[in-house]
Amino acid sequence: MVRANVLRDEQRLHRIEAVTDATLSRLDVADLFDELLDRVRDLLDVDTATILLLDPRAQQLVATAARGLEEEVRQGFRVAVGRGFAGRVALTKQPVILSRVTADNVVNPILLEIGLHSLLGVPIIAHGELVGVLHVGSLSPRKFTEDDVRLLEMVADRVSLANRARANSLDQAAALALQRSLIPEELPQVPGLELAARYVPGHASGVGGDWYDVFTLPSGWVGMVVGDVSGHGLQSAIVMGRVRSALRAYALICDDPAEALTLLDRKVVHFEAGSLTTALYAMISPDRTELRVSLAGHPRPVLVAPDGPKILLPAPIDPPLGTGPRQPRRRSATAALPPGAVLVSYTDGLVERRGEVFDVGVARLTAAVPVASPSTVADTVMATLDAEHPADDIALLVVRRPPEQPGPDVRADVGP
Image (cartoon, rainbow, N blue to C red; front, side, top):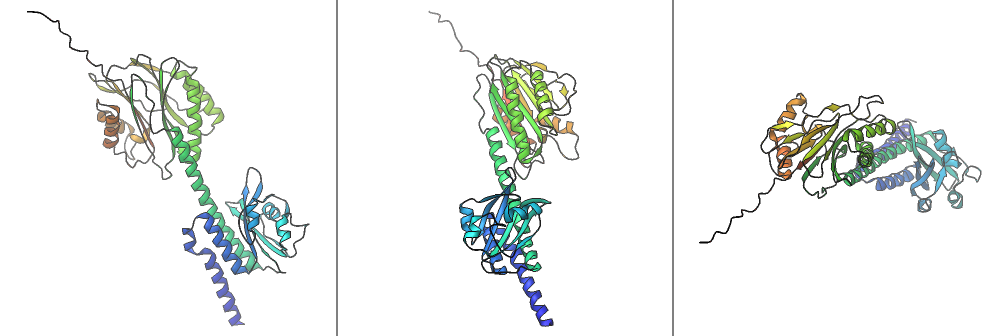
């Protein structure tokens, strides 16, 4: 009797080690699913093993990986939550055992066609929410035990972890693709202006809500934007994309940056509840001599003229976008943009440092801005402020009105 118990414990330990093996984490998700299904078939001595993952929008289980039922995956089999054997497991979020498979308790024709006799299914759960269903089947009569159920639940937990990692990876890839489409590598060519920009992610995912934008309006004015949506990851990138597009639309119907940000604030409050966004929206006149700017909770840009001091543009800072429906009237400021002048706009990740007053970082930035080409300005600022590994995302946009070129030296041709 003692010997039998020892053997049973050793077998149980072997089963646990087989499905918790650390080397499995080195596999990609598809290979991991296949390897887990192969192992569970051997451990439970069953003929089939299948993973069905939940499509939350359709509320259907989708055959994702299978051993012994590969046709189920090839045909893209789907079953609604609550229907049939797998649907019952999903609905109850409890293990289900079928000692005899019939057309009354199984809706998948493939299971009936191959002649499965017994089935065991368990839910795949993550944070209390249904992820999918894992089930195994036997062609011969089989009485599944509590140990079998516990082992299959361990495998389901491993599937859940792998699926979460895959979802995170897909989210990150989607967010990166979205952000790259919204923050172009090259800025547009704008007559009468020189431009440069930099973007450095401050989060491990490489994705955040900071952005910059430059566009020409039908009136001949040029719009330029630097903004920062709170948070990181796919959701922040999505909100950033919607805010960016909305501001472009409002820019077409507003001659005043403050008016455009007022409309944008209403949109953020109503449609992006819970999101907080800071933004700088500036308009440069068709002759490039004048600058209008409005700030929604955003740092003042630095303005440097060849023959003048380095200053923070004297523009009022109004509340960020999304702080509430009742806000004071937003304001704009107007400034001259002389030939050779450089305007540096940025997000707070460039100047904020832990344990340091914000104004100290702003002063460091202001002192670092040279009167030079936008590319040189951007490189100098990033190097001076040690922006290679920031704690927060950084978006930097530099605009310069080119210096006026002296005309040719024309002299009268005086004869002898």
